Amino acid sequence: MATAIEKYPSSGEPNETAFNVAYNTSRPFYLELEADKERSRRFGAAMVWMSQGGRFSSDHIARGFDWASRLGNQTPENHGAVVVDVGGGHGAVSISVAKVTSKQTRFVVQDLPETV
Image (cartoon, rainbow, N blue to C red; front, side, top):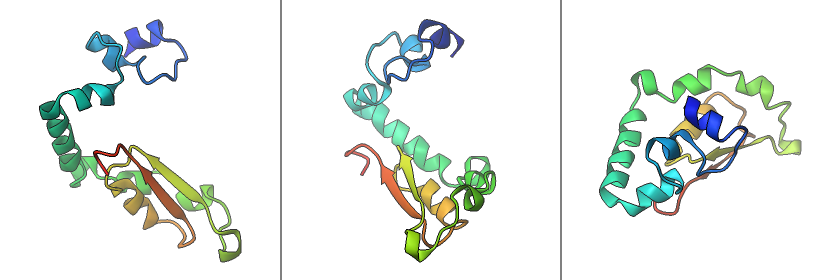
C-alpha cells in the first residue's frame, strides 16, 4: 500500500492501486479477475463467506455510522435520500443499512454484469 501511495499520489484511477504494484499489472483488479475464471470464482466465494456474519458482518457498517442523522430529514414529500452501494454484489450492505434508516431511503446497488 505504501509503495502504491508513493507511486500514484492522489490517484483515483482503478489501475493505480496496491494490487497493481503487488501483481505488476496495469490492468484494474476486476479486469484481472474477469480474465481468470477460477480466480474470479474464488473471489466470489470469499465475498459470500464474508457476508455470512461474524466479524465481517455488514451489520457493523449499519451500527458504526449514524445513517439516520446523516441522511437528513426524510419525508414522503422529499422522497428521502438515495444511497448508492458501488460494488455492492447482492446488496448485503444495503440491506443492513436499510434496516436502520427511514423507509423513504432508497438504495441502488451497482456491480459488474457478471455479478448481477
